[in-house]
Image 1 (cartoon, rainbow, N blue to C red):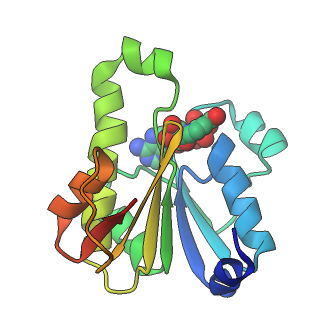
Image 2 (spheres, protein in one colour; image 1 turned 180 degrees about the horizontal axis):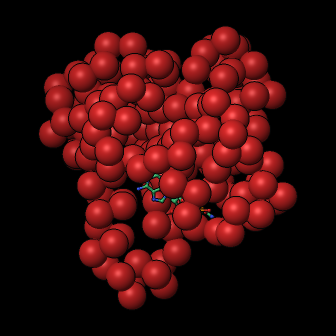
Length: 167
Ligand SMILES: NC(=O)c1ccc[n+]([C@@H]2O[C@H](COP(=O)([O-])OP(=O)(O)OC[C@H]3O[C@@H](n4cnc5c(N)ncnc54)[C@H](O)[C@@H]3O)[C@@H](O)[C@H]2O)c1
């Protein structure tokens, strides 16, 4: 990330869904180093609690760690309203588990993304969003150039004309 982009984060609040997980906890740590305030919204259900605590450095008693489900519209709406940016890393990320439990994967990975996008589309404060999707990153931002791409950004467009995917 360029210095100018990092400076943009100083003093900003960033909602990191799945922010206690493997990738999310690293992102939250980077954001803290950059001078931002990460808020983690995470179910903390992918690992034993000691893994979150000892390996990922997550304290569930931290007021900026919200233990909850990204499919909960009220909870997501409140967390989004407090935030300037959103990074969406909450997912059933284990591909084998997704294959074994396709409905659970749909509920977590698609319904959760839709709930988040709806909340972002309804919120004037959010400046930009980022979705971790397998090996890919997808960005969306209010009023940005509309580039039709596969996957989440299509749902971003469906969520409201305020959101435009960025390649
Ligand atoms: N791990 C990698 O090497 C890697 C590489 C590239 C992309 N990614 C992507 O990054 C994302 C996160 O992967 P990860 O490895 O950090 O997974 P992870 O399992 O370590 O963390 C995901 C976290 O999301 C939480 N979660 C799941 N469903 C939730 C829900 N409905 N509401 C709130 N929290 C929920 C889980 O409790 C877990 O703590 C995934 O989309 C994955 O595809 C991962």
